[in-house]
Image 1 (tube, one colour):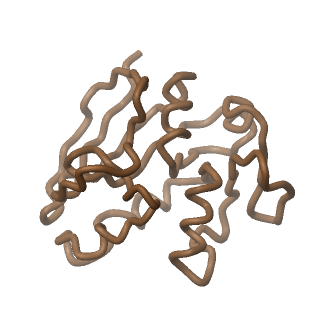
Image 2 (cartoon, one colour):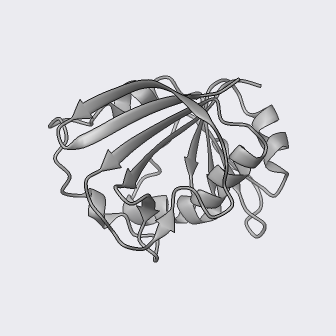
Length: 169
């Protein structure tokens, strides 16, 4: 198994999306004027893992699937099948990550993050803290989530604070 990395944006109060899954609150964030380090991170990724809800939200936000060229595993109990790049599966998360190649970007959502933590499957966590308070929504760490990490780095990117943690051994 390769390295599993969570790379995600969260509001100041810990939400990754509004209750309806919307991420419109990310649209007007003052970053570095470019992609805020996204492309440099994406180039380190070999494959992706996400839940069905995140997958469907990605399709709503863009006409073309933005992760072409990389294997993408979508955990779903209802969607089945595969394409050259996308594998829909209801296999247990540890089994999926065992099959995934190289560095895996755990895209989300919150329940996938929780399950990764329950099984101690996250090696690195990168959180871009967005200076907005949403008050409610989909939490980055759902209730019952527990884990310990060590701080690696903190970077200011415009109004964004990018925090990098590694799993404690």
